[in-house]
Image (cartoon, rainbow, N blue to C red):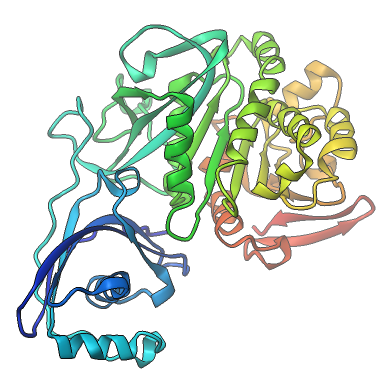
Length: 477
């Protein structure tokens, strides 16, 4: 898929008689998810009204100018204009839009305000000048070519190390206090869809190179709880209320590993709201499975508190959740606890995605029957595969089938959309465990699910399978 992340805004001049001039700084956003024509951008806009005061016509005319002259491929409802907010678009390049008009022109604008977009006459001739290029966060090499930056919010139960570097700021020890903040994550100029670019020994790459890899910026911002929640709420409730995306990582993930994956997901899914990473104290080591299990077992209450915070961002602000691997144990137990505390919290959750979950089938069944399936609002989606080696090893280790097993072992429960990814997730030199973010078909299905909320029967890459255990779906080969 193509996401147009770099647009040359310009100086827009609509010819008429000059008069009174007033400058207003705005935030504008354009987005469309038409297949092969996806478009997602947020920018600052300096709007100059050169004529009598526009009053409440200002956002309407600013939106018309942006749509007609800068984003002509977008429909009227795909362009949003808001008052300037540094939390929404303060780091974006500034475009300039100048409208010159007379009192007579203003009267025409007023008469036309209630017409549909197709009935309104187009604004007149314009000139354009490219906006300044996007700059990198502090501490980043000046010569690094960048395609984009993702501002990632985090809530972590890891103990702070005292290190200045964002990648080393949190270790593998537990903390009773959840640390909150934000970090910038770079996306390389030639980033490929469904790829988490990292150093490869096969390519003789020993260190992360910000020109070729997804890398955390050196600086990390720590935020107090009220400031953290306020900033997320502003972003999640802005424009057309995109909501918040929460990612819960799995086993063998450091803080830096999890942050890079969360940013890559947010970028590839073109999620316009804030993305939050919940990072629990996984050791980030292959042989630390038992220790990770113990850490996961102790993180559910902090998970419930975080879900409680996110469910209170504002009326109608949706929450989307993606949990991976062992992180599903933390998510499902935390969500069950929240729904016991506040049954009405379910209204905030739009989609809950269980990706290759390393959780016992019976453990999940008990939680599902008694706590989760009673919720009426969220759509729960399971992605499972019989090619998933860590899930298979976990089943052998525990002597119990795992929820993430696909194929003949796919789990089917009422109100759980079970998706079997076995046919498309075979990796000859991999573990087939991170397919939720690395496989084109799975990520594309996630894209449709999150942005459109489409039922499995109507999603193009899936086909229904009916059998003795009930209905589920698998990917078309």
